[in-house]
Length: 313
Ligand code: CUA
Image (cartoon, rainbow, N blue to C red; front, side, top):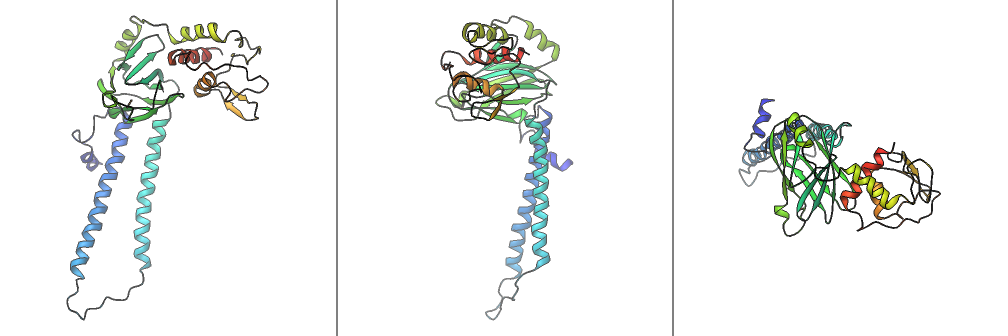
């Protein structure tokens, strides 16, 4: 498919720094080239017919043609095949984009007006720049402190809204070393256009060294444990026995029965919601007694607390 490369020369699209970026550009190239060919056939045909069938004398009469089944079939069936090809091709790429590998390295991202914070499980915190190892799947667990932002890395061809009050995720596996630009692509106020960051892709051993050196913050798991001891301890146990509320032992990933008869999977978003709006989904058999922690816990503390819950197997 040499001709496809024409459509994504380096001057036309950003550097391809993931495998998905290359696949994405091939599909995009196909769309551009097939649209161009269709355009030439359509407009060229129109011009040709305008000239060929121009009325020569006043007595010229248009032939009486009602339809042509074969032609109508062709101009419906050929585009259908092309559209289905684009759909299936796009579906495979989208599936890869949205399916996070299980062993992905996790980084928490918090967007706020107008910067990006990055939190590592080791306790490292970065602002407007973060470091990842090459050829390693990385999962970003993202939320916002204020308004809707959007995390976009052109060279990785990934983009996702970052929404206050819930978690969204992105993943990538960079296969090129270097610095890549991150943009905010959701208009979020005065300095939206300057809300950018850098992702630094480095060799694995370099990354390990960087990660091990000086973590100035409490690791999320430790922070989460502190949150539990200070805020949750009096109503929730970690040994499996229920108290005012359900025990936290083995709660992450479990399907929980709710008071209204429905069930919910205990994931990051459910926990986040239950901390800020405890009455939204009350577990069956427990009173709606929990107060909201809106404003009293930071996003870092909530993310840490979720890490702590994950550890209570
Ligand atoms: Cu944040 Cu635009």
